[in-house]
Length: 391
Length: 248
Image (cartoon, rainbow over all chains, first blue to last red; front, side, top):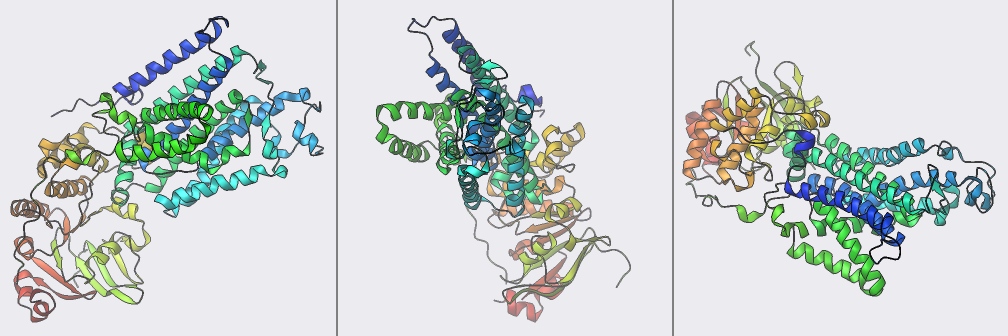
C-alpha cells in the first residue's frame, strides 16, 4: 500500500499537467514577445508595438495579482476584497523611486523635490521620501509596505476571528480608506495626480523598447516564480492545512493548529505578491494614482479568479488574462456595454461553471485542490435506520 | 476521596447564557482508562460541558483540571488539543476535499506551526502509525479516496481515527452513532471498546441500546447537574431518571 506520492517540494509541486502547460507557455510567450518586438522590423505586420508590449505586461501583472487572491481565497477561503490596496502600495513604493530618479529633469528643474512638491511650495523632502533614491531600498519597501499593512490588518482581523463576508467588507473599507488618504495632497504622495512622467529605471530609459522588453521578461519570470512558490505552499502539508481551514475551520483548530497564524502567514505572503505585481505594473504603465485603490478594482480581481477557476492557481492566471483581454476589446469597441458584460460573465460563470473556465479542460480533472463535486458520492449508505428508542 | 489522580476533574462548573443556566454547579470526575457514557434529555448541558472542557466556552464559575497539573480554563482550544484532549463533533467533520490519508496525516502529533508544516514529511514511523489507525477504523481500502465519498459511518470512524492519531489521553465523543446503520453501530461499539483501558473516553449518546452495549458507568445530566451516576442497570431503574428521561 505504498503510495506513489512525490514529496519533493519545489519540483514535485509543478509536475502536474496544468503547471507544465502554464510554465511552458509563459516561457514561450516571453521569447516570442522579445523576438517580435526587437527582431522583427517595425514595417512588418508581425512587429509587436509598444502598445502591445504594455498591454501584455499589464495582463501579466494582473495575473500575478489574481494568483495572490486565488492562494488565499481558493485554498484558504479568505475572500479579500482589498487586494488592489496591496498592489497599489507596491506600485507607490516603486513610483517613489521613479520620481526620485527624475531628478532635475522635472518641469520645475528642482534637483531633489519631485514636481508636485515644488508645486505645493514644499521646501524640503518629507522624511518618508528619504532613501527612495536607492533602488534597493525601494525594492525593500515594495515588500515591506504591503507586507506590514497586511500583517497589522490581518493580525487584528484574524485574532478577532473575523471571517466570511465580514472580512470581505472590512477589506473593502481598508482599500477605500487608503484611497481617500492618498487623494489628499498633504499625504505627500502627489494627491489625485499620483506619480507619472517617469524617465528611467536604474539608469535605463523607460522610453526605449529594449528596457520595456526587459521589464516584461522580468514580469514573466516573477509570475513564474510566484506560481512555483504558491504551488510549493499548496502542495505542502501547510497547504493541506489551509484547505482544512477552508472546509472545517473549527475541526482544524481542535486538531491543534493555530488557524489564525496560518491565515496570517498566507495573507501576508499573498499581500507581498500583490505588492510585487504592483511594482512591476507601474514602470510599464507609467502612472500610479489613488484610483488604483478604488474598491471596484479589488472586486474585479475576484471576478477574474472566479471566471478562470478558483483553487487551481493557473485558472486564476488564465482568468485574469482572458477577462482583461475582453475588457481591452470591449472598452474600445463597445465601451458602454463593458460593465454589463463583466457582470453577466460573473453571474453566468457562477451558475454554470462553478469550477471556472479551467474546469472545462481535461487536464483539470483529478486536481483535488478545489472542492470536490458532490456527484462523486457513490458509496452513500442508506439513510438513517430508525432505531426503537429504549424505555 | 481516593488519593490517586483522576483523568479529568470538573468541579462546581456553572455556565449561563442570558440567565439560563446551561450548567449549574456541575461536578464530574473521569478515571484514567475509563469509558463513560453521558446521557440526558436535550438541553441537559451535555454539549456545553464538552465546550467547557475543550475551551470553546468559558464557565462563569468552577474549575476544570486535566490530571493534577493542567488547569484547562487557562488554555486555548489548540493548546487543550495539544495537551491530549481530542473531541469528535456530533456532525461528522472531516476534510472532504482531502484524501483519507491526508486527513489522518493532518491529525499527526507534532509541531503544527506554519513554517514547520511547510516542510513536513511523514516519517516511516508516522506512516506506519497512519496505516495502523487505518486498520483500526477499517478504512485501509479507502486510503487514497477523497473523504467526501465516504459513507456517513465511515466519516465518523475517520474522525475518530483523526483523534486517535494524536494519541489523546481523553477522548470526547458526541453522538457517534447518530444516523448509522445497525451494522455500523455494532462496529462503532467494537471500536470504542478497544479504546477502553488505554484512553479515557467520554461518549455522549442518545441511542440507549448503544449505551447499554458499551457502558459500564453512566452519568445522567439534567438541567445542568448530575442527576444520577452509576452502572447502566442501576441508572435505568432509578425513578428520577425514568421520570426526566427514560420514561419520557
